[in-house]
Length: 327
Image (cartoon, rainbow, N blue to C red; front, side):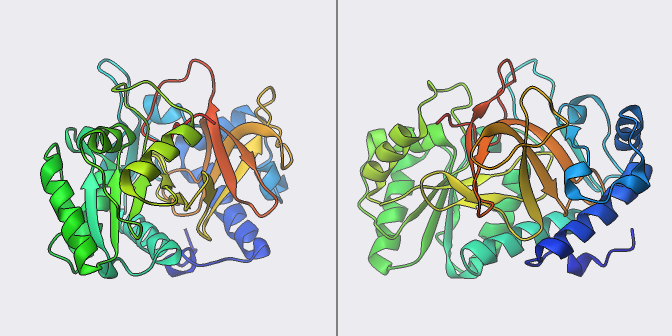
């Protein structure tokens, strides 16, 4: 692939983003055997694809049944999805993990600031208790890069987390609490925190531990429990190397090398306009060595400024590690 990697992670103009996406499509449509077969079976003439809207999106389920990788390269690391016992996991074979590192650090800096300015607290028990989590890989790195000794994981030691939050508030240290949804709820059932400056970022659903809740009700509970005015969220998944972030109201925004489009729920090869509900398709330019064009099992709405909202999942899809809150 001839695209200089340093060119990927910036705020691209629409024209430049489309050019990069088309270049990556032409590469992956030949170098990635799984994607190439998918494109061929659809009868798509690769040179005739001249707009983003013409690019086919690979159904995310292929990551469960195939090795989605370019040039038969040897993976440097394999990320796997979460799931209940007996569920087939997705496997993302990553040949260059530095692309993931550059992606999440650049996105974090864009949406928040240099991570060294923050204390990073992590309440991610369901992720810590398994191997291959891309979220844990990212969190490990963010904690290492934090300049604050209070940063770290809190598995089930809620009292220690409470004391740490109280100390950080007293010291006026900018703090981010990354937490899986059910663990955040477990915590506020035992402790109430009044920390208005705290950034609470929920990173996933209930993982079968609690009944699913509508987002507005959930965020009201979390705001009250932590004494904050808004709940932040991260939209990412095993099969991607980039994440979108929401700072309030469940409205997500992508970094400059990621874009969301919506497909017709009845015609997966057709895209739909803003304001309608559709299946979420993701373009992730960082996924240059696997597949940058993923048709997820999430349902969403897209807004004119390219922000988007996750409103549910397709019926009968398995519960996964990305944000699954139902509107």
